[in-house]
Amino acid sequence: MRSGSAISVQDARWLAISAQGLGRPRPRGPVTRRHVRAAVASVGTIQLDAINVLERTQFLVLFSRLGPYDVERLHELSGPGGELFEYWGHAASLLPMRWQPLFRWRMAMAGPWSESDAYRERVHQWHRANAAYVAAILDEVRDRGALTAGQLSDPRRQVGEWWDRRSLGRQALEHLFFEGALAGWRTSSFERIYDLPERVIPADVLATPTPSVPDAHRALLAHAAASLGVATVRDLADYYRIKPKAAAPRVAELVEDGELVQVAVQGWREPGYARPSARIVAPTRDHATLLSPFDSLIWDRARTTRVFAFDYRIEVYVPAPKRIYGYYVLPLLVGDRIVGRFDLKADRRASMLRVNAAHAEADVDPAEVAPLAAAELTAMARWLGLDEVTIERRGTMADALRAVR
Image 1 (cartoon, rainbow, N blue to C red):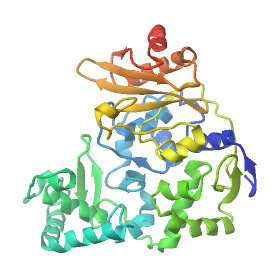
Image 2 (cartoon, rainbow, N blue to C red):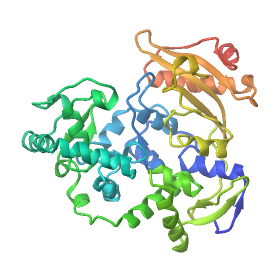
Image 3 (cartoon, rainbow, N blue to C red):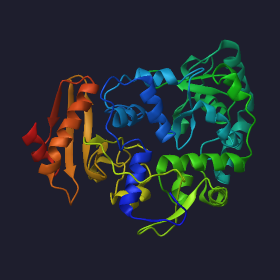
Image 4 (cartoon, rainbow, N blue to C red):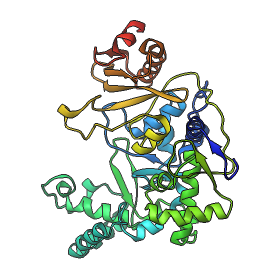
């Protein structure tokens, strides 16, 4: 792509879908570690989340790109000495191990959202008030080896809401994890295990010099551009949670150095930026794709509206009476359009994938989309080890979907 190019919104969609690894058909044969590596490379960061009403998002993101696969392929790449490490990227995320130096600026600020002065001060106050206990927790991990919060000798459990409900021991471990004094990875039940970085992060990565904050920001913004296809400064900044004011001069430097090009996207109020190597190619995927609510293609609501004309709100955190589409709702991508959304639940006891609601977008013919949606739901059910797909009569696509089942 050349600097100064003018592109359509459709071009922007094609760039985004291709950059996210969703433009081509899924592998036809068994999914290998090579396929998983390629999918992770396309997104750069995979958000983690504990919600397991269907399957945890980190596994859904790969299903969207690869189809049915063994989730152990992802576990094999994370953990001590692995190719991926956990830290705060967009949120709690899996990230390429070799990028660990790019996040040391965030570790130095002791937290995922620590660019806020108010947050940083609360963190420092908590640390000062509990410094001796935090030091004792670090010593215990050093002496005993990898531990979960529940394995601490003095966890100091407490009651409260959200963060305050966590034991003081868990809070200490999380603080040490935030600041990089401990590294972590997940068990199959999503519990985080903590250990010293030198027992988790490869020696050559730890020995890599720490880049300056501007250099780290430039690298992360360039990676974000590769994963987004075309993006505004705000889009680029949000991908790895850099403040837009801090990102803007770094983006300008990347343009000056030829690592990014500025383009005009039809209807966008702000300039778009892309890698010079970006190519506008129509999607060739001929099957539908269910997307996790936390998929990096759609996790930015404003960008999703701008690129796909699709207004998407995650309603997990919305009180039930106020939900419009359901609790755990997965959008459905067909070609270059998001055509519907499905409220799904894996009922493992009954061995059923429950479609609690199936909605078509306003400009979509449900009968046209239903066969593709049914095939994708069946593929997901089989991947999850469920025997049946059941469809409730809720939503504008429900009847069409039931008719093709």
